[in-house]
Image (cartoon, rainbow, N blue to C red; front, side):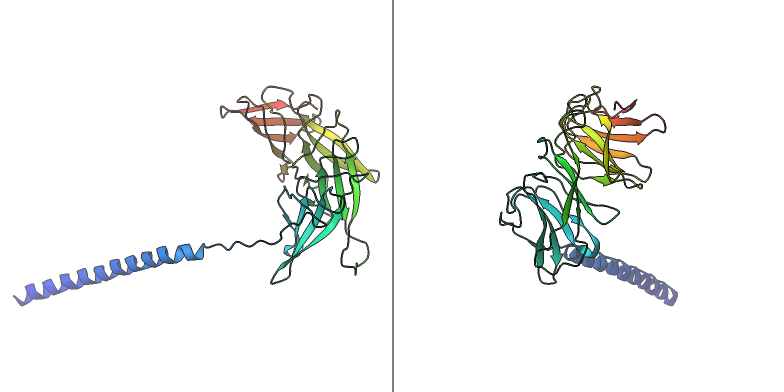
Length: 285
């Protein structure tokens, strides 16, 4: 009888211990459920309200994060000439301060930057405008002053790297984010113009103190490569170029494409068609 009571006690003890483990797990799970949402809570803050004056207006593109957490961006309008602004936002601890770096005049420096700026290997800013020159857009570079600026407003110096003519070199580099390869060459897109009138992917190569433009793909060369690439491109470490088109492709609703450098044979394009199959062809340049 005593043995049976001891066995029952042992069984009860085992069940009690197991119950404690289960209870502990339940408590831990409940705590996780309660704590997790709090850990994922986000705080929304307005860093700057554009006035349409010297700080710019209508910032279509996103911002680029630079060294020290400084944010760089563009406003397509505003400025003293209502032709757009390139700005930086600096965290002052309790607030952010916007400083215009350059105000487009609508003259020889062109106008209306719709895309974001890219930070080049040399620390300069690079971007595009959709108007200027012959009216078809530009690619530009902004460099800080050579000496320390003590003024409230310290404007950067602008250089036009290429003026698009609206012919074979493309036209309207719209919401374009420029990208760099490891050699420092610059890549981007125009959503119109080119050999077939459906846009281009271009490369700008430093040459003789300036830049030379080369078209690495003319869209509209086939029914599958797409047309109207509104946004810019990105590059991988192998130098392959990736981007999207707004229209065209086998489904008529746009494409995602890859351009691969082919030694001695220009560039080759691959695309994901609307049926989900991959296609490869030599690009028409």
